[in-house]
Length: 438
Image (tube, rainbow, N blue to C red; front, side, top):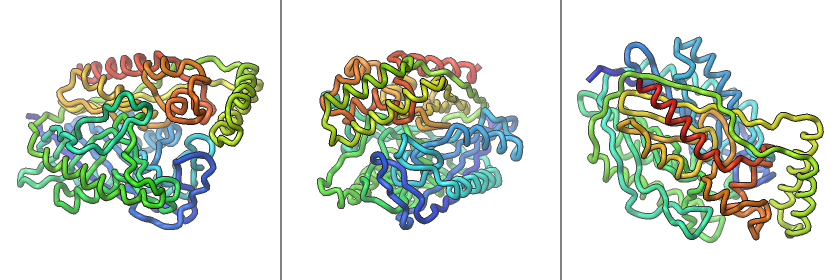
């Protein structure tokens, strides 16, 4: 096999006191009062001697497309990299400071934190480049033996991600330089009572991987988990933090049990594709949006906070439409190919089915799908969900799951996606993947 050099680096991202923590609903005002566990920026570099592919993972709820585009160009210039070969991924913790606003009111960006992140990215990348060395890549899957997740949108379909996908990067002396692990499940362990920064269950799993000596550095890649939550085991919201240890323990137990179920893969050559794609959206009509808001208030409970929130955002979108706002959604899709390994990156919270279909249809020997990468686009539901909720009045509880994923685009002041978005994104990513294998 071609000799490949792999680097790994990390840097904690300092969270300023009183920076708002993103997640768990609008206008919660969750101001950070201290660090429960560090948020990290981690970098992986794969160098085939001609090109480097770079994966940068940060413990935040989402990435910001403008920030990623700007920093990608800076890093490409300063570290002599191809821009399309730099991928940014969030772990989607709901207890971290925000690089950008999520939905309106779900956590405001903190400028000091943004600057801290930029510094951490550079330090992590520089450390990765300085540590590059030849390794073997051993890839495999570790079955989930005890249920830790639940499908959030329906009780009829209980399917969750059945296995952890992993790659061990192993030195000649047998030590594991880095353990990459990929799984699809939301980082929503705590609930809104949590006011300390935390990397959630993914961070806890990374801590346990290191403590058990499974690798010098762990690297979690967030899968397509738009419809998969952790199991709530504690009905008292104040005790939901107790979920963290048992979920992390169960996950790492399963990962460790499957680590010998692996085979060597080739990591070269390194290729990449990055493409801005317009996502299909429904047209925005100001009168229709105002009429819908009025009808929602008539049909629903005015004490329902999310209903009022939805109507406020519809009114704001109508105002934008009156002022000629361009509502088109153009987002970056990306594929990194490293020999047998192929990483497909989606910018929103894609449903589990996106990742499963990408892996099933990919020509790569070891494909991985990640979401909340390079930017944010809100939820990316399957066609089945659009059929289940054909109008904004389809759900009985406005703001509940189902309604939330399909009709909550106005939380970002974004139009509703069209049902064909699933097919379009998967088709584009597979096409891009094929080109990087040529």
